[in-house]
Length: 148
Image (cartoon, rainbow, N blue to C red; front, side):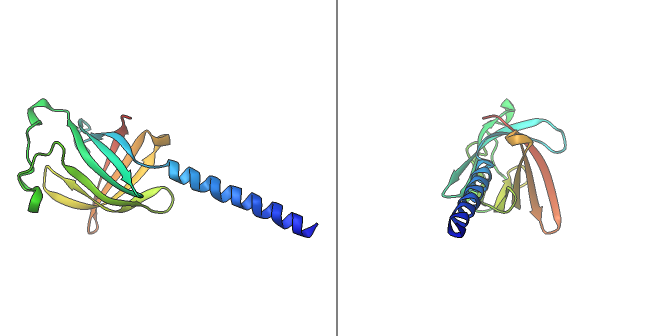
């Protein structure tokens, strides 16, 4: 009887662990997001975040201001210098952390050419994404809205 109780207890524990892992896996920032400027609260672009082998990256898919369709990253360094912002990968190497937070990657702000350490947190049942970029002790927050 004791052996049966242990088996039942282990089965229940395994089911709980699997359910929590499934819930964690469902909280991914992968998808299409409308970026919102933290200063003006205006929509700027659509960024598609994709996940490959547990690592997120994000690319500018659409620029909403028709006058900025051909903008280049004039303040960027290296291979991104003077490259078109439309189609540019601005989020790289983001991985799942604890409690539904994704981090350890980087985000590029093509308007100022700065690269920030990145933390992403899905909020409001997947409808909002907190995007926090750090340089040292300074950070910027944006809240992006789910498109698809």
